[in-house]
Image 1 (cartoon, helix red, strand yellow):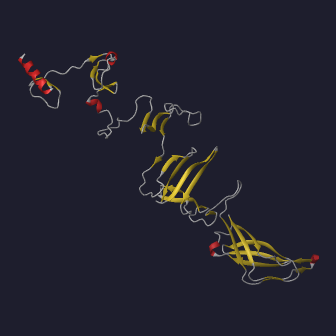
Image 2 (cartoon, rainbow, N blue to C red):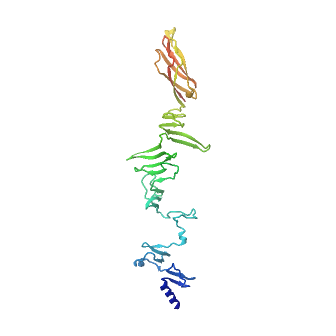
Amino acid sequence: MALLCLVWSSFIYSQQLRLGKTPLALQKSAILELESNDQGMLFPRITDTTLINGLAPPDGMVIFHQPSAQLMIRSNGYWRALSTTDLLKNYWSITGNAGTSSSNFIGTTDDKAMIIKSNSNSFLELGRRATLGLVQAYTDYSDNNEQLTYLKSALQFYAPAAQFYKPKIFIDANGNFRIKGSAAGVDYFEFGATGTSDNGGLEFITGKDGNEPFVFKSYKSATSTMTEIMRLQSGTVGIGTPSPAAVLDVAGTYKMGAKGTVQKNTISLEIATTSTINFGGANLVVIGLAYSPALVDVDLAIPTANAPTSTRATVTVSLDTDLPAGVSIGSARLTSTSNVRVRMYNASTNSRTLGNGTKFYVTITEF
């Protein structure tokens, strides 16, 4: 009784209560302190929270919920479990976790979508196609069990060397899927779907100065070599060449048409004569009173830069002027990779000439 009176007088004086050993050794920061070597504190044990909820329990109240066998605290009008230290180890910390293994994961263990939000807006959702509500009656969109990562935002990449147009994957206002970014630090590229109102297409853009190329290459691992296949640049298309010299420049064999054959080169050039060409008159053949045309072979030198790789070719020839009366071209062929021979005839009985500097237009098709 004396001890109780002493404790009670201490409680009245300090507005504090200490139960157990050394009751006068108060902890100033505690309004209630319990101390024991062999006893614990027993919280109210409640099987059904309906009755206590009817009494409007305040936030901060603690009970032992018997059905779930756990301590619960009242918070924001709800009973919430007080997790143990061991249980807390199974949760991901907002400051990061250590000691994880391949068995750890962030996500759900039931058929519910995992959702990542910012500012209460969903940015990323993971789950089955059916779970995410994305099943459609189209090819590749109808599998209920297809695992999906559903991104609800544009995707931009870290690129400190890109001065403009940081690389980005996005959907534009017309629903077109696009990829956009920088090239060589300051240049620009973009490709993807384009169009509006059921008038779609696929578009490729590159530029800044206007001569940035589209280059297609193939890699051979056995020799660690890269080979350029095709290049589109400044309004030209080069196949097998990095420097297209025409709207279409094919550096190699080519084939035209379903039944076409492989060709090696088509060479068109202009060759001017370096002297006057004289044609004698046709010779009278007494038997039959017929005339034999005079024949002249004109050899035209092919510049080295335009030389074919073989003489297996067809040759067509025309001139920049009309031929003299009675004169005609009989044939043209390669006698070597540096010479075209044009055989010409004069069917007139009069001599004819072809002036110095006459231009022959020659096309060589090598196969």
